[in-house]
Every structure is written in structure tokens, then in C-alpha cells.
Image (cartoon, rainbow, N blue to C red):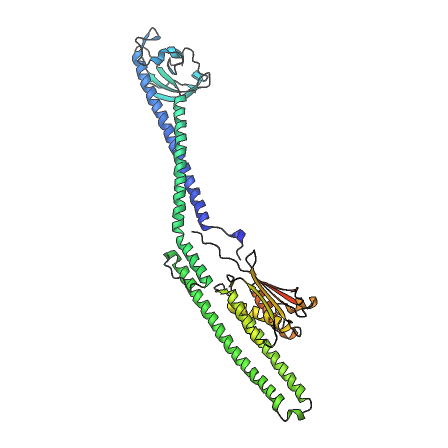
Length: 472
């Protein structure tokens, strides 16, 4: 049995899985785009610094081992202190031979220890940190100066903060776009899931219609994945219906076969006891005929009881109709008033016209009929019936009379489930055992309480779970 705690939504489960895959994919996409953009920014910075190296080389001159600029460099930032663009020349021993005016106040914390002299024609792009903790991009290029045997290197450094600011702006923009794309895709996935799972919702709706009795089979057109399920369900429904019909037919035949001979025998006993000229001459004849008649009546009750027990185990499958309670109650009261026409009863009946019983009509008639018959049989002049729907959805019947009632000691016994017919208390009849059995088969309850009318009060409660709404 599946409890509420173990239930889950297939739509929610698929949505969570797809959302996890989507977020994982977008996460890797974001990381890849961020890395690609950062590499692009750093590559662009390296190209710009390489151009600055070429410009610096074009403006540099060397004389007697000293370097100087023979003309103004095109980029004026080299002449402004702390402008963010700095030029250097190093010899093969990494001794600084020249620096631009912009770098006069600059100190590199890693300095020469983080730099190696590049080979002639080799370019090195790296990152260094100045004395203030600022990061700089540096591009170094190895050259061989005419007239000097050892190689030199020209380096250009630029503040990396603008590049990293650009990267941060890109990351924020990328996050917004990817977040918006994720939200849009999740909404789209939800719509697609609703559309994709619509056949399951339609199947559930058809099953509810069959359960209510407004449909007999699954008639919708379903995808190939559900075709085998719907076909098997239709076969199961048809098989269940045929089986129920066989049970009804077999039990009806059995009832007819058994009850007819019993009726004939009982009639014969009545005729013999009232009109036979031999009977008065037989010692104890009338008493023996009375015993036979009582035994036949007892047998008739046992047959009815055992047949009802067999029927009650089969006749209220989940494919049950809804029964109008007010109609059933009025028909039963009309029949019982005719049966007990010799006694004048004051009958109070309170039944909402909208009440519906979810189950087999015969079970409802059997339960109410036996309980009302008990009230008519043992009541004095007043009978009260109240039918209502409780707050928990259960259908409740209260049947009271002003008779002698049932003692506390006998209440549990007469309602004992599965009590054998030959052990039932005298005077209560077989009907209460039938009521108890049917109520148990519906997982309902029947209790006996004292009535304010003076007699017994039977309270019958049928659980009537409402159909859950279809999620679309």
C-alpha cells in the first residue's frame, strides 16, 4: 500500500532532474565563456603591450652603454608619473638600464626575481605586482643591440585594473543573461512537461470517470508508450465486470435453488400444522411441527446471511457507482411502513437531498434495511433516521427507536465481525451480523448507543474519500 508520505509527483521529479541538468550545463557554459573572455582580454592586453614595445624600440637610442629617447614617444603616458604605462630596458644580467619618466616612482615588489631575460626575438607576457599591491601586465621582448654582444630586453608594463574591471563587468552581464536564460528555459520546460504529461492526466481523468460510474472503458487515444497500459487496464476492467456478473448470476441461482425448497418446506409445515386431521392426534405433534418451522426459518436466515457475506466481498470494487441516499432511504421507509402497517409509527427522517453513497447500492440497502427493520421490529411507536456528511467526508447514518434497547453487555457481541449464525443472541436476528460484515468490508464502523427516545441508537459511518483533483 502506498502511503501519502511515499507519494511523489512525476512532473516535479522530471522538472528537478531537468533543472539540475540545465543548471549544470549553464554553469559549465558560464565558466567556459568567462575563461574564454578572460583569455581574450589578456590576449588583447598582450597585443597592445607588444605594440608599445615596438614604439619604444623605435624611440630608443644607445650610446656608450646608456639608453635614452631621441624623440618624444607617441604615447604621452610614458612622460607622466604613475600614468599606468611604464617602459624598462634591462641588460643580460637583469640590470635596469633605463626606465620611462612614468616609472620613476614605481617599485616592483617581485622585481628582477620574477623576470628572466628573454632570448633574442622571444616575447614573454606575465603579471607582476608593484609596491602598492597593484597588478600589472608586463610584456618583455629580447633584442640584440648593434655593437653590443650581450642581449637586452625591452619591457612595457601596464596596470591590469581596467582589464579586470572589464572582466568583472562581463561576468555580471553574463550572470544576468545566463540567469534569465535559465529562468526562461525552466518555464519552457514546465510548459513542455505539462504538454508531455497531458496523456497521463487524461488517463487519470478517464479512470476517475470509470470509478464514478460515468464511463465503462478507457476510450481516449494515447501515445505508444501508454498504449499497452491502457489496453491492459481495459482488459482488467472488462474481466472484473464479467467476474462480478458471474458472481451475481451464480449467487442468484444458488439463492433461488436453496430458498425455494425452504419456502416449500415451510409452507408444507404451516399447512400440516393448521389443516391436517392427523396432527391433533399426534402426541406433541404441534410442538414438533413448530420446532421444524423454527429450524427452517433458521436455515433460511443462515442461507441469507452466508450469501450476503459472499456478495459483500465482491460487490464494491473500486469501480463503484454513486448512489442517491435520499432516494434509497425513502424507498426503504415506504416498504417497511407497508410491512409493519399493523403498527402505527411516528417516523422522523432527516436526509440531505445532495448526499451520495460511494459504493454498491445493494450494500447500502442491506445495511439500512436490516438496521431499520431492527428498529421497526423492536421499537415502540417512534423511529428517527438522520443522514449527514461529516467534516471528514464520512457518510453517517443515525437510526434510533424507542424500544427496550440493547444492553451494554450485548452490544459488542451482536456486532462482532464474522460471528457465526448459530451463536447470535436470540431476538436480534441475523441482520446485525450482516450489517457488521458489510461495514467492515467498507472499512466503516457501526456502533450502538443509547437513544434519547429510550431505545437503541445505531450509528453507521461509511468512509467516503473524495476524488483528488486532476493536476493538469
